[in-house]
Length: 206
Image (cartoon, rainbow, N blue to C red; front, side):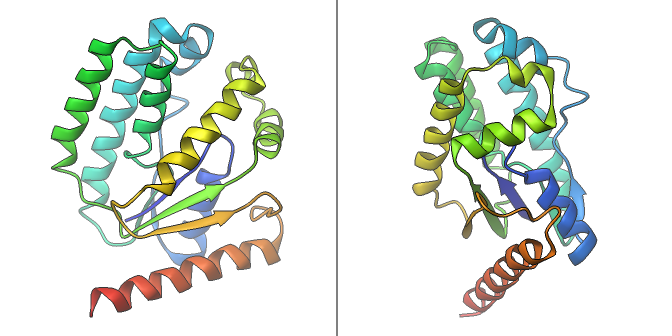
């Protein structure tokens, strides 16, 4: 498995689709449209935080089980990254202590049954650029969040992935990279991924 992660709007699904088209991967996509809780969460985080985290966790666990059965699968968000949101919500008093402990205990138990990715791709982006992409995407429920929320989320992402050790990781800064529309930027990102995968293969044989 190759897994993409990064803050909202960074281009995770776009990159996954590029890997499908250019490298023959099979996509396992995060459910957003079919998520009955996500829009409610943005308007009332304290009420829906725990429910949303469980929904994402359950959905992602199912995707990982399916993806682990085939070669060359790609996911557009990591199950490990869910801990970022849970920790931030707890720190902001949007999840109770009891909810957070229940979530993390469940997470640890279920992670024993998850296959680590062959490569984690962390897409880094600044807050201003992330907000520009979020506004361009135009999802109404994302527009209600203030800049401080996206700044905090970016901080938590950076902290988490600076300490990430669950699998090989490739960090790519995409502030000035339009890998969806610019062929040179797309080639740049794919070349980085190809080189990292080759390195991972070589290390696995040592």
